[in-house]
Amino acid sequence: MSKFFIAQIGRTVGLMGDLKLHLHTDFPEQFKAGSKFESDRGELEVISYNKDRDIIRFRGYESMESAKKLTNAKLYASEEQTKAICSLKNGEYFWFDIIGCKIIQNGELLGVVKDIERLAVNDFLQIDTASELINIGMPKNFLIPYIPRYVLNVNLETKEIEVCDAKSILENS
Image (cartoon, rainbow, N blue to C red; front, top):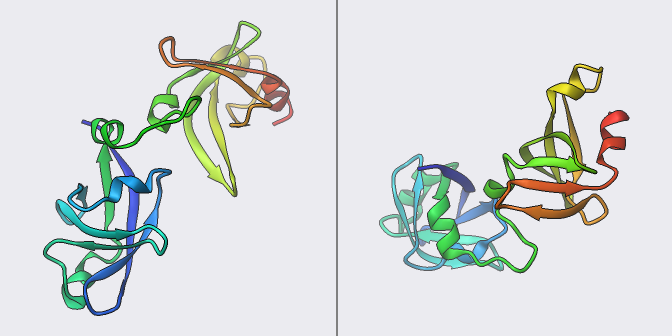
């Protein structure tokens, strides 16, 4: 079962075991009371979460002293857990569904999504270039902004993303 890094615990806040939470997910709603997450310190159960302040408290760590043991711990969620808790709007996709998709422009395979990077306010698809294009001197990888200007259609059934003007980005990388 694949696990995805969704947050890192920061410093303690106050005396009651509250901790700063640094999100690595677009779905803060998954941190509701009673939710359980795997961490590099074992399973953790959320008692409370303040999304306005990104402050969280876990069962069994309700004092400042005990909560300090969780500082810098990383939280993980499974694909199944994420899909069960998080709801997507039309046209939104989980990163783990996008990774591995083929990038197609006008019927030509440009490459495959290796990862997604968040730079400032935009996400970028990190593409491993198709070997046929590498063989004619193109770069081994490139980035495509994940915005409507470049991404025309995502088909998760065929694992293909139809793009526009991405070959120009590749040629100029």
